[in-house]
Length: 366
Image (cartoon, rainbow, N blue to C red; front, side, top):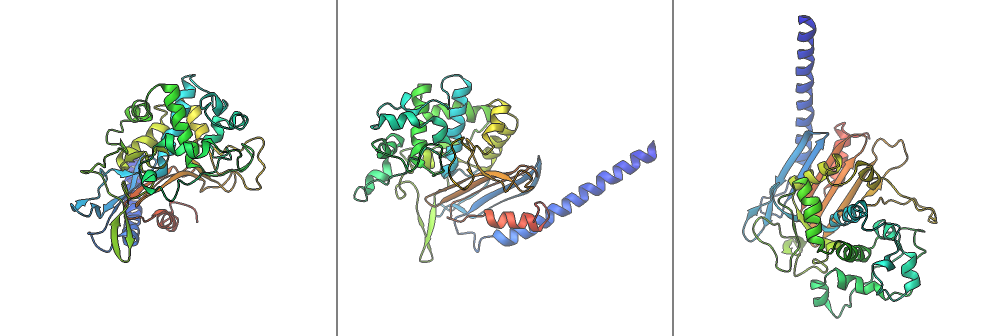
C-alpha cells in the first residue's frame, strides 16, 4: 500500500514538473514573439488557459500614452464586435423567459420598416446568424459628425427603408452590424429597459463581471485604455470622437478586461445565465434549411465557428473585435479545452502568432 502511494506521489510530482516545464517553454516562446519594442507603446493583455490550468498570462505597454498608465489585466478595453455576443445571449435569455421567439419575424417588433412583406420574411434568428440579407449601408460621407455620435436606432435607420435584400433570408451569409442594431431595438422593446441595464442584470451580475462597462457619450479615463493607430511611425488616438459608430452597441458597446472575460466564458461553461442546452446550441454551426450558398455557414447564434469537419481536433468558436485602435478576440478550442483571451489598443492582432506557437509547443495539433 505504501509503495503504491509512494509511486503515485512520484508520478504526481513528475507530471507537475513536466507541466511546469511545458508552460515555461510556452512562456519563453510567446514572450519572445509578442514583446513590444518599448514600454512606451500602446499595449495588450493576453490570457491562455487549458481547462482551469493557467498556461500563460502577460500584459505590456500603455493604456494611455498621455498619462503613461500601464495596460494590465485589469485595464478596460473596448471589445468592438465581441459586444455582439452579449446582444445574442440577451436575445436567447428573452426567449428562455418566453418573451420572444427567435422564429418570430422582425416585423412583429419593428413595424416601422418600410417594406413590410420583406420584414415579415426576416426572422430574429436571421439577424443573429447574419443570414438576413440586410446589407450595411454607410452614413453619408458629408455627415461625418453624425456617424461619430450615432446610436443603434440611428444606425438601423440606414437599412429600415431598404426595398430589397442581398439574398432571400436564410440563403446565405453576410455580416451585418445594422442587423444587430435591430436586435438592440428588439431587446429594449421586449424587456422594457435599456440594453445596458438588461446585459448588466442578466449577464454581468450573474457571472461576476464587476469591472465591465458600456460605451458612454463621455469618454471614460482612469483604468480605461484609449485606442491608437500607427501613422507615419507615430501613434495617434483613434477611438471615441475619432472613430465612427463607437456609440452603437453592435459595433463597440462593451468595455471589459481579460479577468472579466474569463468570468464570461466560465458563465457559459457552467451555465450561469442560460440553460446548458441553450448554451450548447449557441456554440454550434447552424445551417438554415433553405441554405443556398456553396459555402457552409460559419455562424452560430452567438459565435463564429471554425471547423473543417466533425472530427477536426482543432475546431473552435470565436469572436473578433476591431473598432478604432482596439482589437480583441475570444477563442475556445473545443476538443482541447483551451481558451485564448487577448485585448490590445495598438491596432495589432495577436491570434495568428498565439495559435502558431500553441501548435509548435504541442498544445494544439499542427
